[in-house]
Image (spheres, rainbow, N blue to C red):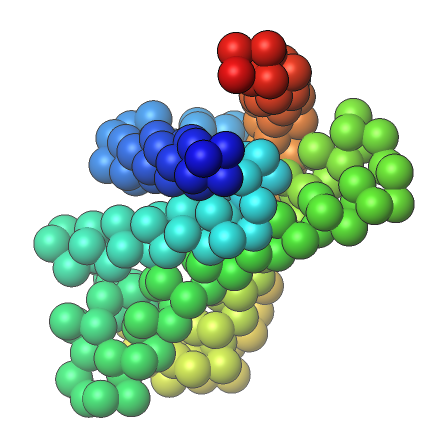
Length: 214
């Protein structure tokens, strides 16, 4: 009975976090205006969910993020939407490449963040350090995997969309990682550090109070 209650609580918690991911992905709340660029925050609940609920939950939440990205790029395409929507691909390999970039890479955000948190806890790293670190690395996982996959799988198409030579793609990819990925990772470190601390404290209080109610 206790296991059943725990599983139900876990599924409800994952569903609530997924709702937050969907909300952020479909509203201006999913973007933070920084001095130079807009930083996405959609991956933040993925990372926090992975910390609190584990890598499996992180994978589900990352997949939710990826599906939202795929839908957005399909219904409101931009210059680079071909990299995120299988419906904009002209061949079968392109379909699988887009699915990997839009969904596969985002699933790995939660997996990496969840296992990194577990590893840091086993090493007894203080949460004041561990939370921002997981936030930073989780955010960079998103940027590096997505941009790296575009470079490896779709360099020619990316060059055509940008109107540059193929040999210029590496510089553009690194520029995006530097100009966008690092600020997003710093914002992720701060947000996960603050929100993660509050939510972990809340969860711990619930776990302490739960046996008393039973």
